[in-house]
Amino acid sequence: MTWEETVNDTTNVLPGDAQTFEYGFLGIYPQAGPLAPATSDAAIAAAVADGANLRVDGQFRAPTGVTTRTFSGYVLASMKVTRVAGTSAQSDVAWLFTCTLELAGQRSTAEPFVQANQTTAAVTVSAFRINPTIPADDFTTIAANDAVWHGTSDISGVRVDWSSNPIQYSLPVTTVSITVQRPAPIWNVGGTRDVGAIGILALDRTYIGYRNTADLGWIGDAGYAMLVGITMGPLTQGLYSLTYQFRNHPWKHAIQVPWMVGAAYDRDQNPNNLTRVQNERIWWSQPHLEGVDFVNTLNLTASEWAAVDIP
Image 1 (tube, rainbow, N blue to C red):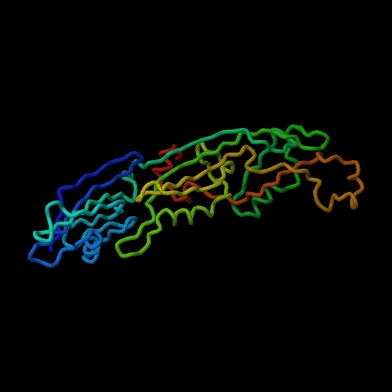
Image 2: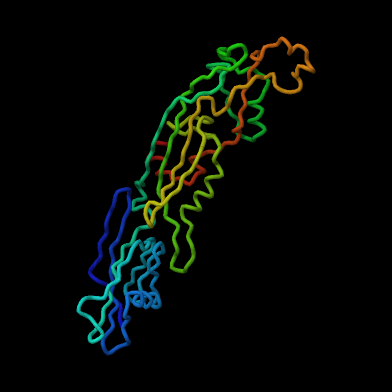
């Protein structure tokens, strides 16, 4: 028997910078040759036995001798196998394989597909002061930043509490989502799983809860933007989407608390606290002391950052 390519050789460029490839080949069994497969399942088994990789979600490979193409980066999305009309056990038998392949990656790397979405909404916080002084972070170490945020100085600003109790105050908080595309997890021709987008998510999710140590353009100045989530999901057989979510907070994600908290000011130990009001000194409580340079650390390319106007 012999394997031959068909004339079906079509590239489809789709929205979202995706690409599919229509490809066909024939398994031809001469009447005088070996017994031809009687079913499509048997025809597929014969192709696999001759070196083909016909697993859906696997890197496509045609049977040995069909073509010199390697189909690197293409995943088999669907396949139809039919016996060519007019062929039977009394004649030459031909099985036709019609395959749809998807490119496991972006068609364009110079101008990648990137989507940005932004939502700004009022978020209610507890406030003793408005227009407070916002500390300048020292991300050198956690201890250094802890000293910046948790000193003994009052945060200043305008008092707005009611009888030493904080009021509910609305802050404009902006959430930004940046969506990019990455190769889907696929089985390569050697039977090894290439985790693709899963590996990227595993690396970048460790920075959730970190704030930006360098300016992040329109998303936020240093310290104001936090990575709050990463979402991954399949787009096609060949592509996954990765969405990075950042949140900009005017108080750098800190909260205001009375300084008079702790044993040193306990009423049983300090009788002055019987009459002292709770708003004499207000300080910051900042749980998010760690930071990272998102542009140079996350698995987004320079061209993807540039596509959303982040230098």
